[in-house]
Amino acid sequence: MRALVYHGPAQSTWDTVQDPAIEEATDAIVRVDATTVCGSDLHILRGDLPEVKPGTVLGHEAVGEVVEVGGEVHHLRPGDQVIVSSVSACGHCRACRDAKYGQCGEGGGWLLGNLINGTQAELVRVPFAEYSTTRRPFDLPLDDAVLLAELLPTAYEVGVRNGHVSPGDTVVVVGAGPVGLATVVVARLYSPRRIVVVDLAGARLETAVHVGADVAESPGKMIADLAEGPGADVVIEASGDPDGFVLCTRAVRTGGHIANIGTHGKPASLHLESLWRKNVTISTGQVDTSSTPRLLELMRFGRLRVAQLVTHTFALDRMNDAYEVFAQGTTTGALKVVLHRE
Image (cartoon, rainbow, N blue to C red; front, side, top):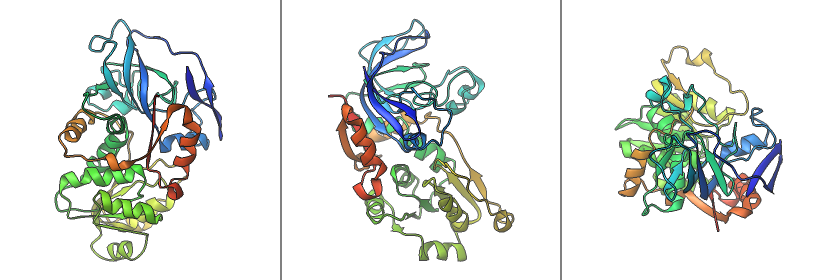
C-alpha cells in the first residue's frame, strides 16, 4: 500500500510500504476512505514529539470500511463503515471504565501515527477496534464524519466541557485554527452570552464570525478591557503558542476557567505572581473521544453544522500538497484539510 512515512524532523515521504495485518485478536484492518492532516502532525514533523520514531506512518483521524477483523472483535464485520478514533481504548482498565480513553492503562491512548502506524495511508490497523471505532451512518458525509475522529471531540471534551462553559458565560477562544473554530461551534450549544475569538490572521477572524463568534479581533482592546474589567468566565487556549497562554491568564475573571486545548511544543509561562489570588482553574487534557456518538447524533439532526470547517480536499496520493497547504494555513486559508481515496 501507499502511505506517508516519517523519517525524522522535517522529513517525510509518500512511499510504498507493507500492508498492515492483524497482530492482536482485538484488531481490525480498515480501508481508509478519508483522512486528515492535523496540527499534531506538524508538531511531529518539527521534532516536537521525539517518541515518534522514524519509519512511522503518520495520521490519526480516519473514516473507512472494515476489511478484516480479529477473532475477539464481535461487533464489527467486513463491510462496516466506521469512524476511526484518534484514541485507542482497551475498554476494560480503570481509566476506560471511566470513559477516560486517552489515559488507557492497558496499551491504549494515542497510538495511531504516534507509537504505531497511522491513518495517512490506504489501510490502517486499528487496535482495540470495538472500543476505538464508531459506526458511520450512510447518510453522514465523509467530510463531516472525519471531524468526529478527533477535532470535534477535542473541542467539546478538552475545551467546552473542561472549561465548564455554561449559559450566560462570556467565552474567549484564543486561536482561530481548526480546533479553535470547532470550539466556537460546539460552545454555541451551551448558550453563552457571547463568544470572543482572538487571532492574528484576519481571514480566520472573518471565519470565526461566520461560524458563530460574536466578536473576533486581533489581541488588543477587547482583551485589555476584559483584563481590566470583569474578565471572561471561560478562556480556551487553542493556539498552542506560549503568548496565547499568557493572553488567557490576562483575560480570565476571578474564579474563572482556563481550558488548554493547544498542543505546546515550547514552554509557556505561568505568571503565578498575578494569578495566585484569582482562584483560577486551569485544565489540560488528552482527548478521550468518548463524546463521538453524542456529537454524531447532534450532527445528523442538524444541531452541529461543521461543513465550513473543511476548506480543502485532496486525493490521498497528494499528501505532500495537503501538508504544504495546511502548514501555510494563515495564507492559504486552510482550516481542515481532508484527503479522499480515489
